[in-house]
Length: 335
Image (cartoon, rainbow, N blue to C red; front, side, top):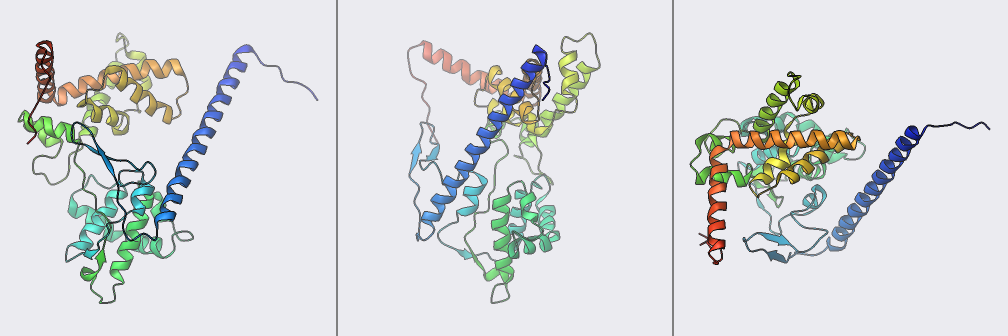
């Protein structure tokens, strides 16, 4: 047999690729183990009449379930397997909210509530097929953003429509219907500072369709990226050319979400670097330099989009600094 020679550079690339494959295999194995832990836990508890979840409460009043494998704040799989103990008739508006819920789970949550209800109604054939033949059917549910919760909701809709009375409103359901805030931290700051524009961005003001703060920040970042990429004299010209076509809500979402909790520039850069790696970026130097610029542009976009919120954050920080220097603890009265 002949042999194939490789240069030192080619060898380094091969070894790097091997490391990435080994890392990916380990991550896949870890995710499989995590899935099986949760599934096995649920299987052991399936005949219990009711479940109780002990919680830890931190100094802010945030409650965290202590059980690590199965809880209502867990993954899509965990949430899909947990329901309320007591079922109640869904009433006249019940089907509307089940359709809205399934639209949210499919990622169609940027439309008005009426449009989301219509989305669910238009998908009814696929919903019923998923409920009646989840494995060998069209597997529509598997394409959802949250597939397991989507499948659970398909079962619920099918059961409601097949209720023995012929009236879905009488169907007793125990499935949780989630309603989430829009970047809660920024909502609080917008309310505290009476920032009307900021409040509109996080849906504190009436609107026909929900605003998406992450998309708003992503648009500002994308605009800045195009400006620097079009200017060869810009110190960020090369990095912004790399970022063209990469800036979307997912790239900036984590940084925007954690900005109100005091995320540092280093933290924001690491978050964006993780998103780039998920997209197949492998060059470490390129990832570092590009994520560094992206983090700076994201921070600038945040300052522009939520100027009043940033000023309020600075005022609170200054107050805390003054109080601490006086030797007193920072205290406040919770409403």
